Length: 268
Image: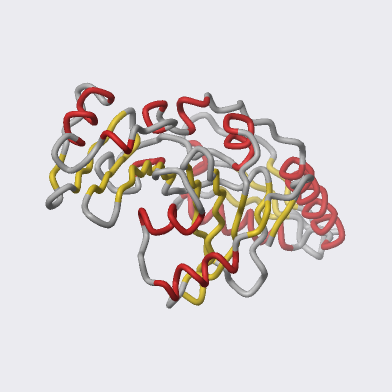
């Protein structure tokens, strides 16, 4: 069998002066000292490697591949996120009956000290805090606070803030009354998953690319946001507070809402 043997390594010039013995098919060794350049020696090495047993190479590839597969399939653990990192405590119970466009900014400044509040029109505010982005809207129609994990509004463009999972939300806020999995209108390749806490006025959402395989959501699914605080009430009232008052859209959304399952594992 043809072989490539490196006899010794010179300490003078690295690979450039490696003496190589190339065993040819005539079994007559010819010594080549690679004095031209490192590339020449690499050519000889590749030539010799190609002449090794193809079966041996295949076995090597299979063994290395198996190591990567089993390493990737091993159990992974993730530290549970603190509840105040899942959703800012100020948004757990917002006194909407006491807030309007005239005093919302004062309330934001008191509960997010040091935050720079950006005005985005009458009754519209945006700010960053603890590597999270927030916005709020107060007018005659919409009233809500929204938290975006990971700086998704680009107020904190270099944010490394992690995104909560479905399991994090369940651990911190319990079981929601309703949930929905629905296609986004006019976005045929995107799908939205949302968890609705009617009694608390909280909605946790995420949007994912759907692709050609049905998207499944489970306990480890990340919630990219927005994470919303709205006036508590019926699902129709909550949806109208932050998204739209279009009756057709609201009716479509209500048709997709379902009671949270007793034993949640996967929904699609």
